[in-house]
Image 1 (tube, rainbow over the protein chains, first blue to last red):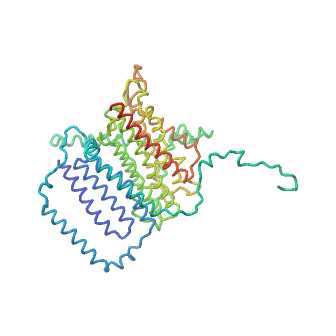
Image 2: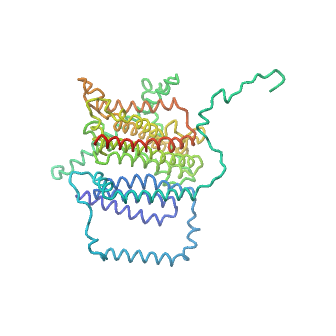
Image 3: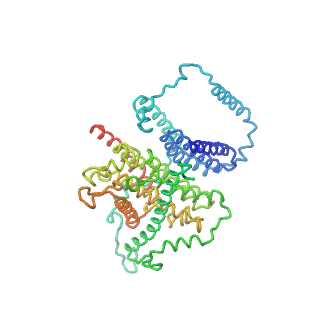
Length: 201
Length: 337
């Protein structure tokens, strides 16, 4: 038990510190690396809470795929933070308003202010002993919430199609047609000529 | 002190198990270096390493000493912290994967429920070591190589993921030990997923080559274009770590294939008295057999062009594995699993 508590504080401390460093780091690439560290520690917290499947999926999806693309973009863009901070004061009021709203929301949550008292009662499925995390999650996700699950998939599909539409340009580019390349034989490509002496081709 | 704190026993036992495994993996990398060079030499009708020690078997250790004793050079314009961190992250992740690999019944450091997801997660993190090394070197070739490696590994991870899903559907568990047990039928090797899901085995092998940046997909370190890719600026012990990462990744992938597709420690002929017993030797034989296939592929297949690599990943392997998941799920449903 003591080990679990020790690891909880370890993961939490590293996560909070790296989350702070995401916004404090001067180099944007360092920011993304700290973001990844925060993700990994969040996965550790999931594991401690017994949600081993969620922890692993967090690493596979967010750290293994999403953050790689983040890092990619940030490395390619070469963002100059000093330049970006110049207009900082102009957008400060808007940022302050949004920050204030979020702060109020957080205070309301902490004060446990509920609109619908019935909604606050836990409605999750009972945990069956002897069933692993993954199996339990799969059973709920693919039976009870199958339509919501499919709808979430459709939302992601829409986003993907949108991203492709936004970036698709029908430029004239030379494309490699693999089938054509594979179909080439020596007879169709190489022509052997007999070169007459002192006459050339 | 141990009698006062009985909870220390499992901790100590875990440390001992991890150390033994670590030493075994390190010795295996030395064998891998020597073995691969001998195999390549034999195919190319050369002698291979034959100077240090009898038949040159001490060559890997001589290389190791050379790497340790040379001076590590830090490039002036490199991003120092990330540059130094990258190889360490790589080597730690490479060894971390071995924590969940069962080499025999009960011979595993951590027998966790989501073992296969853990392996998948750790191998997908391996790309960071390469990206960080490429970016922090602050030089053209390493950076191009990092971009190539990252795109390649992310692409092939998708098909690896789907192949793993087909195995999981058949085995009905994410625990590696249970996946091996699920292949324990009275038909011996005919019950292995490598036979039952043969096309998936082939796709996994190809994807594993791409995932470990091995020939014919070694575009991240293509000598003819990028000198040595992300490792250009690394020297001495830092390069040793990168080299180690690559070799351990190959061993991990081979062990993963032995567990997922070749029945781990199970004997191929359980009906024969002596060799029918399941033991760690079968696991080693299978894993090293896959390693042998990795080495031979390097000699047989020429290097792919980058667009061919991407096409193979996204337009060939991904659709096939995606359809396979649906087909396997339907077959299992009809068979009443």
